[in-house]
Figure 1 (cartoon, rainbow, N blue to C red):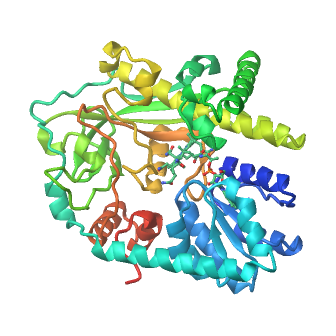
Figure 2 (figure 1 turned 180 degrees about the horizontal axis):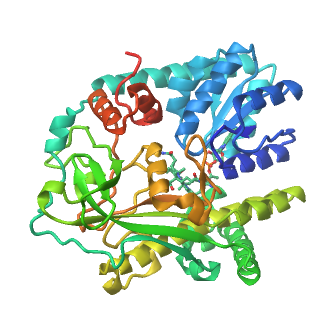
Figure 3 (figure 1 turned 90 degrees about the vertical axis):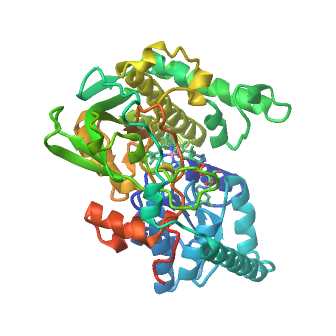
Amino acid sequence: MATVKGDVHDIGKNIVGVVLGCNNFEVIDLGVMVPCEKILEAAREHQADVIGLSGLITPSLDEMVHVAGEMKRQGFTKPLLIGGATTSPVHTAVKIAPQYDQPVAYVPDASRAAGVIRKLLNPDQKVQAAEDLLQEHERRRKAYQDRNSERKLLSIQDARENHTPIDWKNCQISKPAFLGLREYEVEVETLVEYIDWTPFFYTWEMKGRYPKILTDPKLGTEASKLFEDALSLLRDIVEKRSFQPKAVIGFFPANSDGDDILIYSDESRKKVQTTFHTLRQQVVKADDKPNQALSDFIAPKDSGRADYLGGFALTTGAEVEKMAGNFEKQLDDYNSILVKAVGDRLAEALAEFMHKQVRDEWGYGRTENLEMEDLVSEKYRGIRPAPGYPSQPDHTEKPILFELLDAKKRVGIKLTESYSMSPASSVSGMYYANPESRYFAVGKIGRDQVEDYAGRKKMSVSDVERWLSPVLGYDPRS
Ligand code: B12
């Protein structure tokens, strides 16, 4: 089992490993960022009965397709299991399974892994299990093709004409208190009150909202025990100052230029320092809803208004992985996973904390007076979309952001070849302050936008198609 090349996430994979271990399977865990050849060599060396791949971000999907193709080319006959937050039964059926002529199974969560493997290995069940998988993939491929052929997309010109209507003459634009970069080191103690605990329980497959989950008739006892362990770990981290969360933020003079956002080197706005590229919704909208792009929320360069964009990159730090690694060495999987899960919660808490500082620096945050619950349900002005999230599905915007923020030097976050951030407990994104700015999903896009986007980014169309493959509304081979 391995997290594929370019991806640094392993909480989900590690949980699967623990569950399989409890079910008497021997798991050879190759860790994270594992190149295809190393996975296949290890599988041969250990005569693995099954190979499992994991991935959190969309570029990993492409790597999984590659591994499946290599397995076929090198004559493998063992089943391939696919898992991780970015994977899906549809992608597995449409893109991965056709590459390999042996069973390929998508496994949604750890609790299903043992059952799936047993079926695929049991001499009495495996032929039927493989046949069932083939049929399921075929059914999903057909449904996917039907959806694709029925989907109506607007041309990119028509979608642009239906952009978010903002009255640029009269709308409120706030000027940040400073321009340029600023670094922060934040104590874990400060972040504790900003933690949103609900996703922490999700990590352990306990689906329920915090704090209600602590008294849930079914999950309450286990959830409370887990929560107490997390709090005790946090107390220890605070006391020993084990983690040093860091952030770099920046405010930049900006104007939109069509679907791009120009970042100027200073307030004179004469020189463009860098350009961000956004993607626009092309699905036909019901009612009079707009076809949005993030650039809609920044004043156009011909509007005569001086606008600003913010950016951030933050991390709980490399100490998370070091501490988790120490537990792993002691074969303490539970605490290793707990440390990483807490590290991730702190990264999100830091994102929430920094966004509060940013709203204050922008001025409008000072009077907002919001509780944690309001922050979780985003009851504030402005948004902080991250490259990879639905309103900006393109991970290749991350290196542009990182260069602008000098993120590697200032906070020590590196980008892998798939633009995963290392250390894993890291988040990066942009700040939009316009009161009209909202999160949305770009959804499927058409070939005309992809060609236009490739031109704007000076990338080849096929490269853009590869990075954006999950949002393509057409089959690039047709
Ligand atoms: C928590 C979270 C984070 C945490 C950390 C995640 C982590 N360490 O795993 C933090 C805040 C750090 C984070 C950061 C980012 N995230 Co995030 N995050 C999530 C979120 C909300 C939950 C993921 C999670 O932890 N689930 C719990 C774990 C246990 O589940 P899991 O990993 O899926 O594993 C289970 C199964 O998948 C399966 N499984 C996993 N591996 C394997 C392997 C095998 C062999 C098998 C059989 C099964 C199996 O079993 C596991 C246990 O049940 C998801 C949304 C979602 N609902 O999935 C987005 C999500 C994964 N994030 C996303 C993105 C984009 C990012 C960022 C790139 C954003 C940014 N620009 O900053 C960064 C990337 C961080 C980096 N280092 O590069 C996207 C990824 C898809 C994409 N478009 O690329 C998602 C899907 C959100 C979205 N809808 O767009 N994220």
